[in-house]
Image (cartoon, rainbow, N blue to C red; front, top):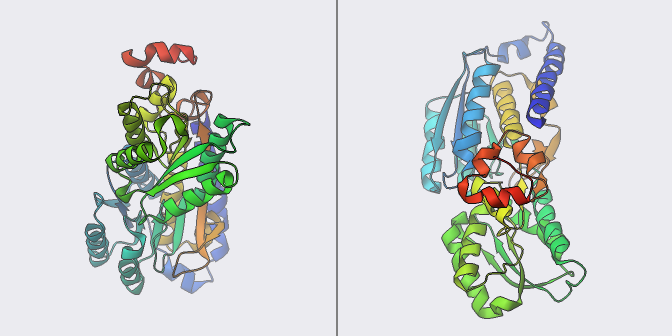
Length: 368
């Protein structure tokens, strides 16, 4: 199982990094003085709770890893902004006032968070951008390869359309303009779709809200005509649900291919039934484990190990050469459900194949 593979590889990495840590040497007084023991406090700020992954995977996995990496002596302080940028700024300011050792933050609004990140930097508290790249002097970045996400989605649409795609009309429902990831997803998708299809309508969606995505879809149906929409690029699964609802409300029974992202349970079930064409599976345990490793190591002042984890480099609007850990993604279709979310232990077959979906599950070889 991949989950086991990840666990083994992380353990092996931890051992190799521990060996690297010895490079600091007992004669390096400054390095030794900057080191802290296991009793560190890591702050975790997540952006919203509408997307299922944050409470189901990110928070509990990071909490468990912080405890494991600190022999039970470390502490995770957690807050969720529920989509409110001002609230998240206040939460970050409070963690600075409480003098946590490092902060992991997934930004609601990357630009608005910048001044709070700067305050943390001035207080000598490292901020690691998690899943979304915040502005300001962040000390690190842990995320999936977001351009690859968009590329995988775009490639899926081209595959679904086949060779007769040149004049196919596509609707793009992109993510929130305040989320820098949304722009990268869009860029990645366009790198595949431009000059290959007709992008008839394109929308940015405030707050990634499914209801807003549904309204965009209704507008596109009115402008293009339901029978002329060949495919729908939806940047994530929640918005895919809103788009599909609008398509069905318009009387469409033979739905066009609709993309998504996040491998939410309801999306996997829609993929089983054929309502949604695909999603992008992002191995959340791998991302969360990497984030916890980076947060604890920088909190402890173990910079050799921290640098070994952050082998990539990124930049935001204010800071270049940000140490980064970027994790790969995979397409999730009817053919890859077993090799992704089931094999990695994200869902059990019985969770997907409830009574409502048993017949559809049988057609794709899933038995609950």
